[in-house]
Amino acid sequence: MDQLFAPWRMAYIDGADKQEGCIFCDFPKANEDRKRLILARGELVFVILNAFPYNPGHLMVAPFRHEGDYENLKDEECLEMHRFGQRCVAVLKEAMNPQGFNMGINIGKTAGAGFAGHVHLHIVPRWNGDTNFMPVIAGTKVLPASLQETWESLKKVWEAHDRRR
Image: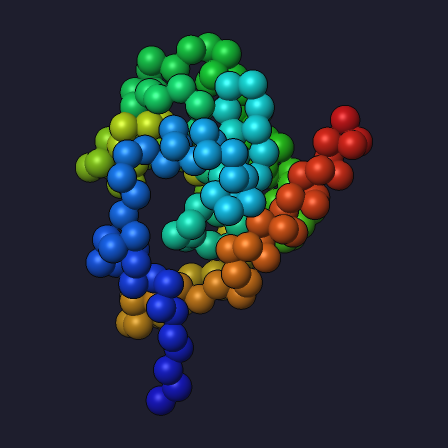
């Protein structure tokens, strides 16, 4: 039997890599976009690569302002968050050629929100056959590229989109 090692997943599983505070507040303030996997910034929101992705290219769009309730987002925040969601889809289509997308907001811990105190929109690219036995049987998700390689690729396409605007 072949073995597939994904040691980076252990930090997520055992919580050793658990961030104190709120990543959606702290990471943008650090001004370390490459290190923190922040892909783009708007006036009210930013785009960040999910460090524990469901699929390669899994992005999240979050307002800079700390808010846990979707209904309390300001109209301008909600609009910019969804406009950036549109841009994420366009960039992912060009960079990774997915065949579909899942998009959604998990509101509350019971709904699966990893950071329930800060609303964020998930954009997950999907491909035919991207689900298989590995997560179920082996508890492992296979990603074909590192997070940093994925960030670099998406950053180039995002910047190209900016130049065309």
